[in-house]
Image (cartoon, rainbow, N blue to C red; front, side):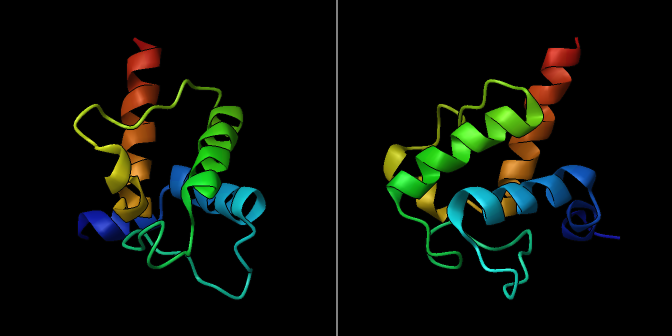
Length: 96
């Protein structure tokens, strides 16, 4: 199984998809997949991304930040799968 398939079956992915639907008004008719980008595929703008970060922090009880190497204007091109990876990394660091 490749990493995208693993991500798709991941509990964090499932929860994140729910957060996207609730915080950013993504229709239930749209199947959210790990390779979807925030802006181009899901239609999020910068205000939606701010709402998303807040909702992620609430859902996962973490302080969520995009990695420093991610430029602000590139946030909209990040994939759902990459956000799952960020959440996993933050959660692992919080457990230590």
